[in-house]
Length: 110
Figure (tube, rainbow, N blue to C red):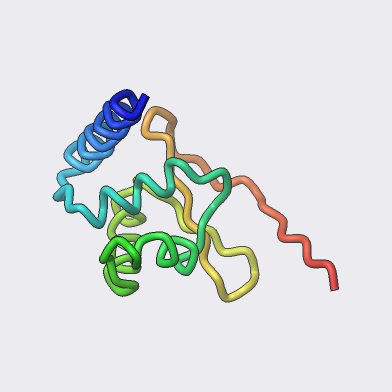
């Protein structure tokens, strides 16, 4: 069972590397980790969400931010602005053409 999980992880890392290579971007461990987190997320993540997961792996907050910027510029991820001061990021499907972002709502119960 553990061997199968390792094989799946290795396949995912190779897929992420290929996504980066297709955009002529170096496949650094930090970029791979950021993309893996976004690929596995069920909803868009903030910089803080990603930093909470990646800082324990030795990737500092500034590196996470720089990689989010680079990956957004390369059209691998999208940045959402929902009217609050927090950006949210999500992976883009490389097999679909880029379209305007669908609307998102943030419900706050006071």
